[in-house]
Image (cartoon, rainbow, N blue to C red; front, side, top):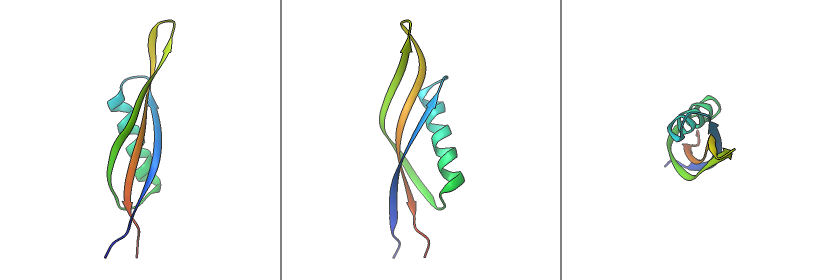
Length: 67
């Protein structure tokens, strides 16, 4: 039997939501072992002078705990 845990990761990018997701997953896998999935809980943009300047994502990352 395996046991999984879910943790929240927030990531930002000046390029796109996709880039923010990729950065968040890359960072999570540096620290967490056995990462199995991630889903986007929330998306948000930062706006300055009427233009989008930042893409933000909140990810739920699932990883399996080691025995």
